[in-house]
Length: 163
Image (cartoon, rainbow, N blue to C red; front, side, top):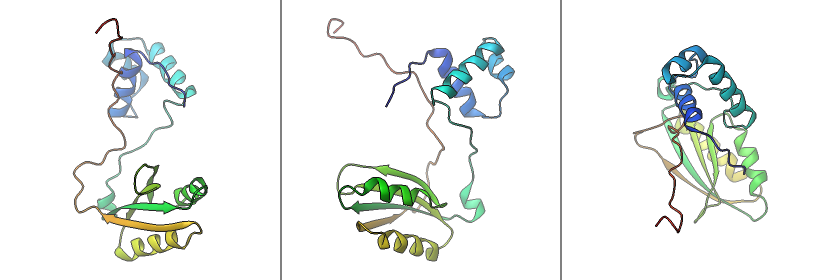
């Protein structure tokens, strides 16, 4: 994975877009005291570096009937993890698929409207070849759910000489 070096202006542009992805370059420029051209160039450079990958909206899933959030831990036979994760990622109800350490090989976050939808999803996963077992947890309450974190510049760590 390539680490991209951003400066404080880049982070200000990112935070402005995170607060409102529809904000115009002109409005961003005004809010962070730079030129509109600077904002445009920074956004294009971050898109080229894959730092900005499109824009999104924050959907109130429960208002649309998606009242169940499940976290599914999966044990997968060695060597088949990418294949299984790829298939699961295609499901329209899957929010996230993570490789993890610990007891499970992968964790899936899924939103469904009904217990029957969840049951069908888990049964489809368990029927996949090379899936050894799953462990499903239901979220009882959603305290925070966000499409992303608020990005901040990295904190400089002192070198050995500075300590």
